[in-house]
Image 1 (cartoon, helix red, strand yellow):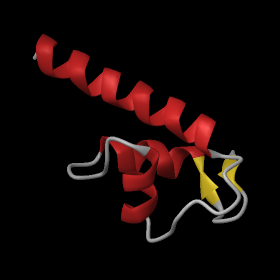
Image 2 (image 1 turned 90 degrees about the horizontal axis):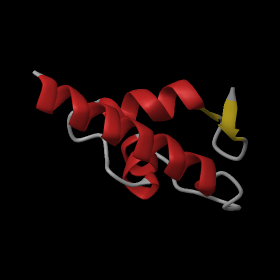
Image 3 (image 1 turned 90 degrees about the vertical axis):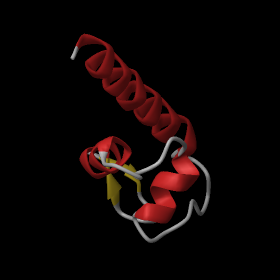
Length: 65
């Protein structure tokens, strides 16, 4: 599903970038890594939620492993 229409970013691409090493711990860093920047801002709330979810998942994986 697209979360950012302005930059044609999908939820999967944002999740994968947030999970990748050096991908980013904030929407701004994720967007930068994907080669773009937020335009209208309508996507930022959902992007922030996705990044937070992925950071929590990584944190849990590190503590479990």
